[in-house]
Length: 77
Image 1 (cartoon, one colour):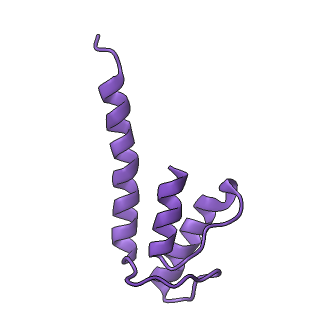
Image 2 (cartoon, one colour):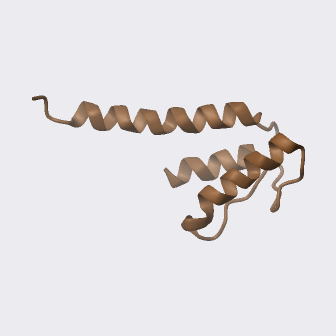
C-alpha cells in the first residue's frame, strides 16, 4: 500500500517522507493543508491536483479493494 500512498501524496502536491512510519502523518497533513488552503510542508509540482474529498475516497476504495481480495482468497466455510 505504500506505493499507492506515495502516489496519492503526489496528487495532493506533497512529497513522500523518508520513512514509512511518517507516511500516514504526511498524508493527513497534506489533506489538512488542502482543505484549509495552506501550502504543504514539502511541495511537489504536479499537473492536476486531486480535491481532498476525492483523495480520501480513492484511499478508502484502495483499502476496501484489498479487503475484497483477501475475502476472495479466504476458504469458504
